[in-house]
Length: 495
Image 1 (spheres, rainbow, N blue to C red):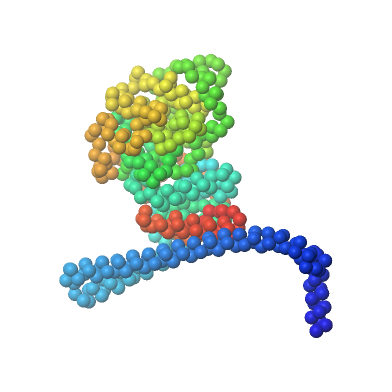
Image 2: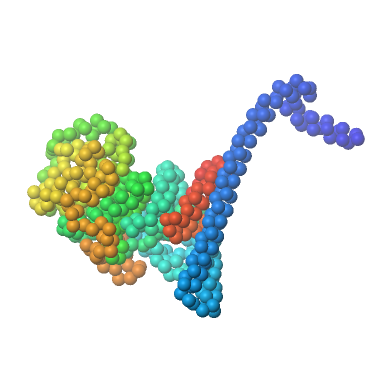
C-alpha cells in the first residue's frame, strides 16, 4: 500500500506542470491545452487512417476486378471450346494451359524491378533532370528506352507535379501516336521510366538531315501530329511543348509524341510585357540597336542549323521557337497553344527553319509576341496556297486559330483533302529511317559519356506494368501509396 502511495506521489510530481496546484481548478485551467494537443493528434491520425483506408479499399477492389476478369476469360474459353466441338481431353489441356498463363501473369504482376534488371547501353538523350538510355532487360532481352530522373533536382526545381503529369498521361492515354510507358520504379536517388524504344530518331534530326520536306512528306507527319495532339486533348491534357525534338519516329517512320511535362519551356517570368512590345515594328533590332542582317533563305537555313546543333549539344536549355504568344505573355491559355506549335513545325518542315527564328531567345520571343509584323514567307520558298493558308490559320490569334473548336477543324482544311485519317497509321510512312538492329542508335545525336556512371541502389518499388489503358492499377495504386506516405512522412515523395 505504501509503495502504491509513493508511486502515485511521484507520478503527481512528474505531472505537476500539467496539474498545477494539484486541485480541480488547476486541472481545469490546463484542460484546453490538453484538448488542443489531442485534437491536433487526432486530425493527423484521421488523415493517416483515411489514406490507409482508401488504399486498402482500392487494393481489394482491384483484386476483385482481376478475379472477375479471370473468371470471364475462363468462361469465354470454355464456351469457345464447346462451340468448336473439342474433345474433353483437349479441353482439359487447354484449360490447364490457361491456368498456367494466368499464374505466370500474377507472378509477373508481383515482380519488382530495379535498375539492376537492365543492361544500360547507349545514351540517346540528356537534360536538366537526368538522361535517357537504350537498355535491355536481362531476363527477356527486350529493348527499351529508360529515362532516369534525379529526384533531388526535380524537387529543387519544383518539377514533381510535371513528372506526375507525364506518368499519369502515359498511363491513361492509349494511342498509336503516343510513346508507350511500360513500367516505372525508383531507388533512393532516381526515378526511372521504362518506355518503348523508337530507333527512328526524332523529327529535328530528320529536318537537320533533309533541310526541308516536300508538301506530301510534311502532310503525312503534320497529319500524324494532329492525331497525337488530338489524343491528349481528348483526355484534357495540354502538351505545351510541341516541338520537333519531341516527335519521335519508330523503325517504320511513323510518328510518336513524347516528353509530357518534362521539357520546361523558356522561363519568361522575368520578361515583362512592355519589353516585348517595345519592338513591335516590322524591323528586328539587336541589343546594340543595329539592324539585324538580312539573309537569304539558304543563309538563314545554314545559320539555324549551326545554332540548332549547339542547342542539341546542351539540351538543358530549351528553345522558344514553337511557343505560343499567349504562353509567353502569361495571360492564360488553353489547348489552342498546341496548335500554334503545330503551325510553327509545319512552317519549319516546308521552309527549313522556324517562322520566328532569331539570333537569340529574347528576340525570338519578341517576334512571336508581335507575330503580325514578323510572320512572313521567304520568296525562295515554294508553298501551295493551301499550305500557306493552313499555317496562317494556326499562327494567329487564339480567337481565330484553327483547332480552337477541336481537331476536326484542322482535319477539314483543304490541305488535308487527300488524307485518309482512319488508315494513316497503316500506310507506308513518308520517310523510312535506316535501322540495322534493335539497338541501333544512328538516328540520335551523340552525347559525351566521359563522366563516370554513378552506381545506383538496387532497391525499387513495385513494377507497374502497363498492359492497357484500362489498367488503372498504375495510376490509382501510385496515388494511394503517395497519400499514405504523405500522411506518414509529412511530405509527398514519388513512389
